[in-house]
Image (tube, rainbow, N blue to C red; front, side, top):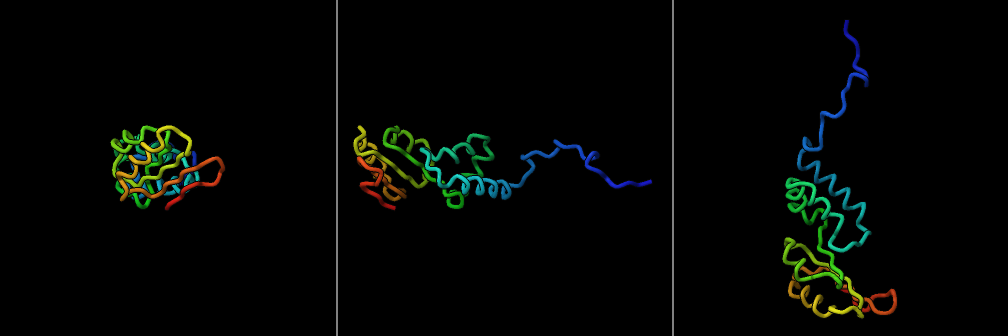
Length: 134
């Protein structure tokens, strides 16, 4: 006698994320990135986490930088030249407080890649930016 399968018959755990096609993972990454789009964190920390999971995730994320809107986000207290040397050629955004040391050095390092600069925001005493370019 045949009976219908129930949830008790289904054994969970045999399907892993590794079985998903690249296109599905890319869709998941896209959803993840859009959820955190308003969160401006240095070095694009949200997408950097994806790159550190495994080689496959790194390849998928870096193969679609425009779709995921990947960019290198810098603040002037970071070692800008070193960061730009280790990351792939992605758009660059920089934020700086005008009173920080090394602001000139770091902004100049970014401007050496002027074709990749997507955003420069330099702040002064107030919360409003002194210089803003997009």
